[in-house]
Image (cartoon, rainbow, N blue to C red; front, top):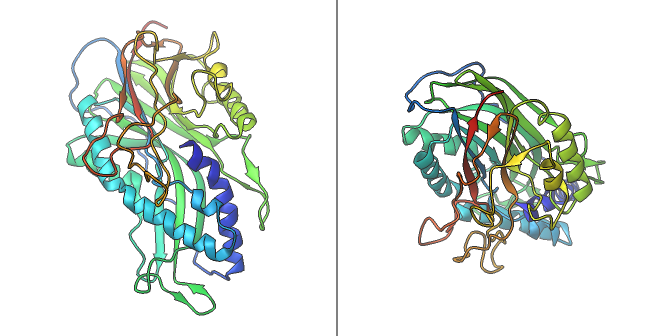
Length: 389
């Protein structure tokens, strides 16, 4: 979400500084596992009909605000903040939230899904708490429901850590020195999933890249960047070609960087004939934050699948993400706090929405105890029609 990602860069700087000051030594973690299926997929059963493409976008939410680390004044306070953040990640319980997201996917069976904040939390050391690979967890739930979705493309963004993790005297104790026995690393990804049960849909040529414009900060080890990017595939629906792109632009707190990324998107993966784009664009559709939405939807560019005149405001962001003891706590707000529309399904060329064929997903509580919400973002589902070229 916006506040979490705006603080991520500064958390990285704090992590490095704290690690150096406290002489933390942890092994470098292996790179993220790259999941992907190259080539074409044609199997399963799907109702015959027009060239209708069912599309979904969903920000999964990394599981905690990173705010406590920003408030740390000393290395000791920073270590306490990391423990608090990871406790909140456990509290917001992605395995439970993933079941709700998988159920929404089962109900609508989108052909293509663009996911953002597909987080991987890796813990290591002496008896550490469990880590979470959001992609692996969600895929397992989809398979458990009898659904067949391939990971078609992945954009690997930030990798933050390892940062010192203190849990208890029994788990991850602090030794003299001080030396920390556990660490935690955060990895962020954007992912495209393809429904293999549509025999008329095929895909190939997975691509990913980073934007030239990046928000960067100075740190004890030099400038650091979040490395935001995009992922894409080339696809065909009943022999009609198009490109599908997923992205997550910089937050509204860095408007010039975000707007530069939007321009790069238009000139790069978003350029060409028929393109469908999903993502958390971090630019309010009402123009109240940045100009990126206006850039993307200017005449001759992308059309928005969400029609506010036919539907409603379509607010998709954001539910409460504060960490306890700040009330009400992450995903613990019983009443929705969604108040802006930044999660979008866009199209250009032959891919068109008829205006009212879109809906929010996960904008109602899915259970009677926290976490109440599948994510701090609502997802968006829509139907696009591929006509003549």
